[in-house]
Length: 203
Image (cartoon, rainbow, N blue to C red):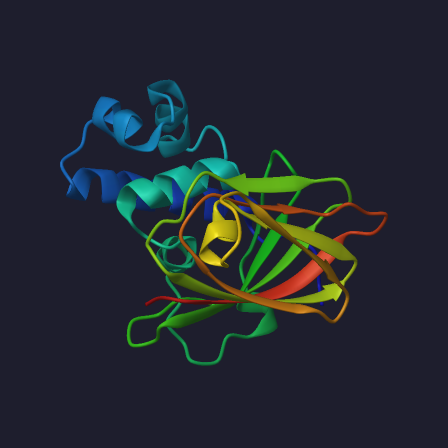
């Protein structure tokens, strides 16, 4: 699978335009958006002007504010509706903070509840999200290479144990399924990058 990044500036500008549109649709000022998301007004302004690329963590906060799964946000920014998604059309985005690569294999589309993503997290890197954008967001994660630690906040109590976080350590070939209702993080302890396929299904 190719790992080069295609048209990063174009995707960043499309994300910026889509985020601006979502904010304006709700009638929010930048100050109101900052209050809703916990992202500073200055950062929001730079993102909307395309002066900086948002990190995965920031996108997670914005998606929570908009109550929009990240897969849907990227699909709206990509603006491709074909049933066959050729390799060259699978948009690749890179988190500027962690180096996390996210490739949209099967983007979210109207009439479909699922989306498929390929992720590559560098060894030693961690991507954290403060919350889920919507309740009960279903995930099926299959690890292709490396080791991946997935931490779900507050999941111990739901599993019948004491209240607290649960960390799942995946090795190559392992598959983890869960419904997301809280903060979550993904860590590649190394020595190799963690490469995985993720299917996200909306309720």
